Image (tube, rainbow, N blue to C red; front, side, top):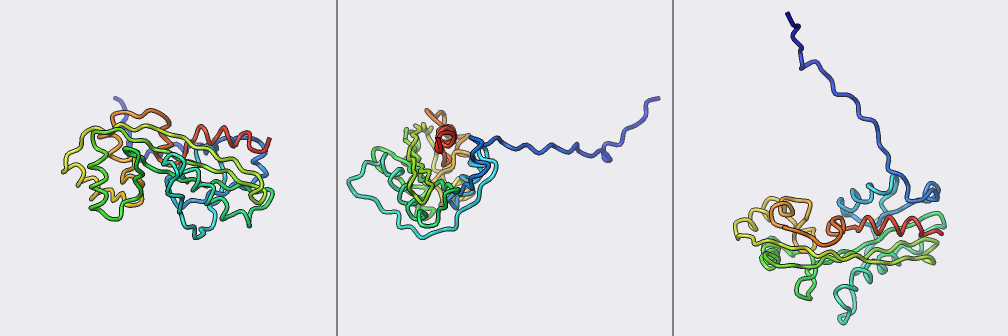
Amino acid sequence: MSAEIDFTKRTAEPKPEISVPYPSDIYRNIQVLLASNSPRRRELLSLIMPTFKIAEKRDIKELYPSNLSPEKIPEYLSVLKAEAYSDILTDNELIITADTVVILDGKVLGKPEDASDAKRMLGNLAGKEHRVVTGVTLSSRGGKKQDTFSEATNVHFAALTENEIERYVNIFAPMDKAGSYGIQEWIGAAAIDRIDGCFYNVMGLPLHKLYTRLKTFFD
């Protein structure tokens, strides 16, 4: 006769802690700061940087010249944000600033003002291709050493019904997201049929390019 096994008494095996490698050994002695309140950017950076701190928020007027090309806006704003911290950076600190914009038909879509505005934006995005551009600035040594770059990803949206748009906005409340959507949410799985470029870039940080730039920043 086989003995019965009481599965209710089984305990899960403890999972070993996994730490991601530094982009370069120099970062063992560098304090990396992320100047962002976005939980998505914090989560993304943790995939390539084992330790970092969130920089204290500073009031920054995110204004740019009216004649600036939409694709240049993220880089411009990332530099603007970096300059706001230049007076507090020490030689062993590096700060990462970033800005992401959604561009549809040559026009920038920012964060929606309210639910109605979010639904309008999604209605415009549905069935079309748009471009997501993220600009990033790495800054150290009191702002005397900088590296600014950007990444672009083309996002193809399938058609969306008014009911689908309304349900998404009501459930996920994407008021803190440029273009009124998060690719990592339901809408990314159900309505985005393909992307051309970096997936993480659409979330807010172009991780591969960021990692390679961090590797060589202090060379």
